Length: 383
Ligand SMILES: Cc1ncc(COP(=O)(O)O)c(C=O)c1O
Image 1 (cartoon, helix red, strand yellow):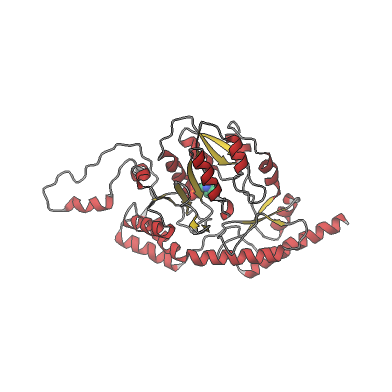
Image 2: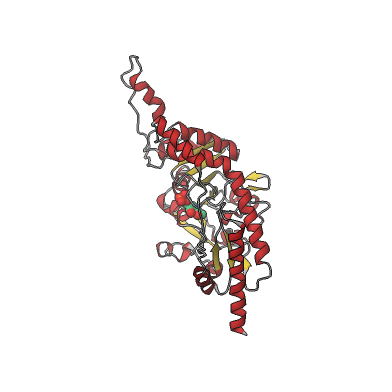
């Protein structure tokens, strides 16, 4: 048995969509990106969506939209992937690390309040593993403090919290379509907002400073008219090469149709895991998972014997991980304001277990059984 931790679920439909892009011979930034943006805006109920090559790029540009003065501070959870805090550094801002709520592992709002000072300009909540941050509380706190809210939705896609799509609670939402996520385009990301004025320059920022649909203007190149300047563009802004391309968008359009099914399957798997591990001593779910309500990108458990458990599962062909080493103890980030004692200790109990839409019930049962035999062996050794 060899069970992967994460796996993209891709099939013939995605291959067919790429074939069409090949046949059009337009694989860069083009009409499929626009179509995917429109579909994503509809899906999330946002005014505007912009496709980029990753959530890392989306988070960078999201903060850039506000043109914060250099040296201001951004509150980020310590328990997250590097990109959440790197976004602050890319913008010459200072990440301030916030501890986690012990139960949900989302940003601890009391700690955010303790870390807040008048230099803070934004906060980036992360819906860790897909479990929603209590956005009604966070947004109202942030508004009271004059903070902009950028939601890091890398672990969610289609999650609805209190009747509202995650990613649309704050000023800007950033999604990831990297291969381990709820849906994938290989690599890719999407930014959404209800304030198009905020996104005025985003299309130029994501495409080397040019705010022009290249594929539209290319039609003018051979049009029989008297315009000799069809090739002209102006550079008014520093841009990056962060655009999504038509190959990725073609895959994304197919994956978006499959997303509800993927999310349903993930929820079934989590229900099966939760039923299976209930009663195994020394193993507790990583989070108060509510699979009937939210889609999750990760499943995991907490155990005092984390390393022994990982080695045991490894010996049975079960891949595991630990998400994450808190950023506040990563060498790169150690010099920034932090002090996150809970998560800096607690992450040593985390084990991420296999979760992806193609995982079979048999594989889930195999993992659960391995957790049970680990526990039995441990009990025997102790007795
Ligand atoms: C919480 C979080 N934010 C941002 C990212 C960055 O996403 P991407 O790989 O699309 O750049 C990730 C990626 O794993 C993530 O887990």
